[in-house]
Image (cartoon, rainbow, N blue to C red):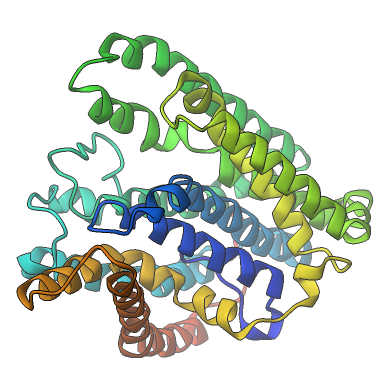
Length: 380
């Protein structure tokens, strides 16, 4: 996913988490294709990789904004939105071009309405059963909505003198999402239990909408705020890195036990909040100076972190095309060799995005930023 740091200020622990997130997503989505049997076991909790991306984005984006507010007292909206545009839109637009122009790139037959993709509203009313092609763009829709509203909300908080309560407000968003899921479970999910429409309704009403999936972003914002404005919290994080990791892993294991049946009432209502909290604690370990994750540098995770957004966008189409080609050649598509070829293809696709799209758009971004005023803006 798109949030990232420049190399000069890179936190290696976050590279490890971003690499973990994209691997989890790949394993989870690979189950929809021909696959080895062990993928069903390894990949069953891969859905949580998106939640990890949400926590990372919430922390990184809010942290950048909090630092700017602390330094200048405001947010330069032109600079912020220019950076977000050139980081997110060119690779996304290229992926939409592939999906809408070349049907053979589509992992499934039916594609949703184009206007929902370009307005980043595809996560609402998404019929994953009948319109499931490029369905994984739902999470990008949520992140785009987050990028749009967070700086505006923070500027409003500054003007209304309630900025100090940012962490409390973010906490209420977690409660709001949890309450929304509880209400939706009782009113929309229970009536379709044991019917053919269950999965469609569960995804459409409970899994994809923004208002039911604010937990991860909110946890990231809370951590970002406290790391910027609370010395006590910052010291706690930096002095207990490995303890936080152990605690986070234990809580994540307990959460996976609760979410063993992903569509149970307990998992549907409480699971996303518990996953977000678990990954939030692990993130705190990743940024702690006393943590092994903070101290360890890995070329593999660093590269996967850089490629993660491009891989996320393109992986389903690439896996589909590779397996189709293998079938035409009369080769096995459900063994480990096929899996390795598909994963290698996803990385190769990510590299194409990086050098053909992301690097040129980054140059254009720098040119645009040089023309944007650095004067902070408090107006909305």
